[in-house]
Image 1 (cartoon, helix red, strand yellow):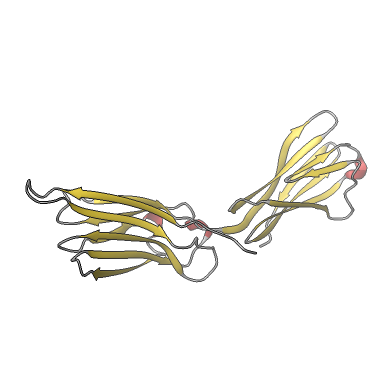
Image 2 (cartoon, one colour):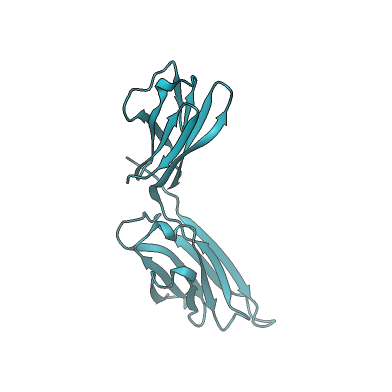
Length: 223
């Protein structure tokens, strides 16, 4: 399957006036992600903070919060022919589901700055459905509707319904995407109904045990 993921870039430019006669001296900062990390795969770069300055290299560090024990730092400095110095500081880790949306901060210090700069960045990790569950959506006097939801990134886009012990009768039950609709509420429909939710990385399943006058949601996940 072919997929395309966007590169995330945050660029901040600061122009510092050192005196009335000198030209402004820029401090250029960017936080980039070359490819979206996928949970469970090999060690990758979660994000890179790049700082370009003149005269001297910037000091670049990170505030990692809860990720401090699971992320390594890789920092390098390059001096260009025009005298500009570029510092690259990368976060290296084996991506996990728990890392998704964790806030980190790139911290920049330089002699031309009156105070340190902090650039916020939310880590993004893609993963297959981890938890799939079926819950009531709409209930009427003669029909009942349940919806299938999944914890996945990107969100699940494909849903399949099937019954554990019998075929789903079209005249009594209708499925529409992540919804299952009981058009009749009769005892012969009692049983276990399973929803399979999937995205481009995998699938998980959740189930609903339905019985006339009583229903029980029972969810689990299969990766």
